[in-house]
Length: 424
Image 1 (tube, rainbow, N blue to C red):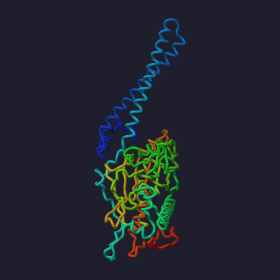
Image 2 (tube, rainbow, N blue to C red):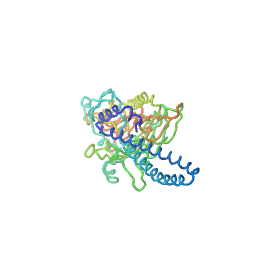
Image 3 (tube, rainbow, N blue to C red):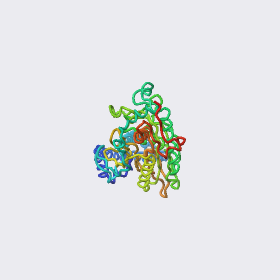
C-alpha cells in the first residue's frame, strides 16, 4: 500500500497515477474522505477516553451530590466511549479496504497506455532464416513429440486441458535449466530458496495478488490456503512483520517453485502446447533493499535476465510495459520477449518489477533507521519460466532432422551432450 501521508500531501499525483493506469480517480477522493473520517473518529474517541480517565480520578475524591453526578456522567461516558470505539473500528476498516484497492502509483516516466502501448527498449540477437537454411521450422509441440520430451495427451488425460508431462529429454532439459539458473543466481550473490507453493491469504494480499489478478488464483477453501502463481509471493512474505538491519541490505533470494495459474482470462488463447498452462516451474529473483537503491537494482535484475537469455543463444527484445498494463504492485516493469520462429513474433518469457515500498507496507517489512524504522523496497524478476524457455530452445535451435542443438551454457548440466535427438 502507499504511504498515507501522500493522500494529504500529493493527492493530485495519486489522481494522475490512477488516470495513467486507467483506474478510478474517484478512489483517491474516497480514500481522502475515509482518512479524514478515520482521523476525526480517533480524535473523538481519544477525547472521550481522556474525559473518562479524568472523571474516574475525580470520583475517588468527590462526595455527596457531586459524586452522584460524576458517577452518572461516567455511565454516560462509558456508552459514548464504546460507541466511539466502534466508530473508529468501522472507519479504520473502510480506510484499510480502500487502501488495499489502491494500486502502487506508477512512475512519471512510465509509458502511458494499455497492453499494446509498450515501448521496445532494445533488441538482441537475430532470428534464424529457416528459409535460407532450406527447411520449414517445426513448432515446439511437434519437436517435443519427436524428442519424446512433451506429452500433452496424457497431461490432459490425467489433469485436464493446459496440463502436460515433460518426459525423458524434456525432463532433463528442465532440470538443466534449473541448475543453470541457480548457478548463475548464486554467482550473482543470490541465496537459493525452495519456498512453499501454498501460502496464507495474508501473503497473497500482501503481494497484491488478491486484487485484479484474483481470477487466476487457485484457492483451497478447506484449508484457506492459496497455490502461488509465482514464488514472488512466498519470497515477499518471507520477512513479513520483521525489522531488517540496513547493513544486511540488499537481501537477494532466488526461489525455485511450481507455479499455478487458472489462466481464466485466456480462453481460446495458446491452447496448443505448453506456452500458456495451469502449472509450470520457475526460478524467480527477489530483492529487499533501501528505497533509494531500488531503481538501480531493478535495472540490475533486468541485466541478469538479459545475461541468462543471451547465454541460451536466443533472440529477444526488452520492453517497458505501459502504465495501464502494470499489476497492482508494480510502479515500473520490464519484460523480455523471446522470438518464436513458428509464430513469427516475440512472446513474453521474463519480467521484472520495481514494487517500491508498496508490498513491504502491506507485509509490514521495515528497516532500522536513525529516526526509527521505515519500509524497505521490494523487487522481483523472472530468471527462467521453464515451459516458455523450453519452447524457445526447441524452436530456435532445431535442426532439419528434428534434433535440437544444446547451447554451450547448458551442456555441463546435460552431461556434455550437444544435441537432443529424436526418439520417434
